[in-house]
Amino acid sequence: MRNLKVLAITSVLTLFIAFNTNAQELSVAESSSVNIKELPEYVIITSENTKLLGGINITIDYKKSKYKPQLEELEDLLQARKKLSIRNQTDLLNAMSKLGFDYLDAYNANAGTLGAGGGDDVEIFGSESKFRVNIVFRKKEKFRN
Image 1 (cartoon, rainbow, N blue to C red):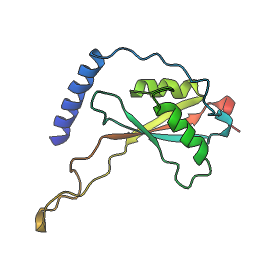
Image 2 (cartoon, rainbow, N blue to C red):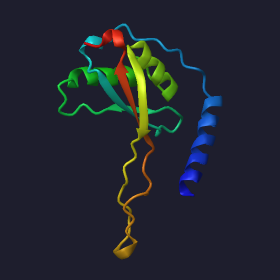
Image 3 (cartoon, rainbow, N blue to C red):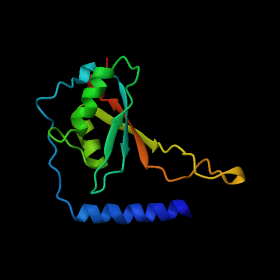
């Protein structure tokens, strides 16, 4: 029931924002040093609906990855205001396609958070957590090694 309410509220807010913002023109920044040949075959991008006036926060987990510099640069290209400034998942899918990646899958990335309480009333999962989606991309066939 709680998930249904959250979904309904999220849907209404998304529609409100969609009707009150202008379409974003997608173009790949020429100044970017992102090179498709240097990126890994698979990339997982986490998008998080957290911004007050619409838009998404984009993160790529590159800790201890041998591709860390390339993934950091890709994250910056997608997120930075002076570059692509991706503000929704549709633009993210289109941008990754233009960069040489195909969409494979998406899955919920929400992690349960500890709730406030004591004794038997401790809520372990389902507290107020941010809505996150992991989107899996794979290099297009012509760019694979």
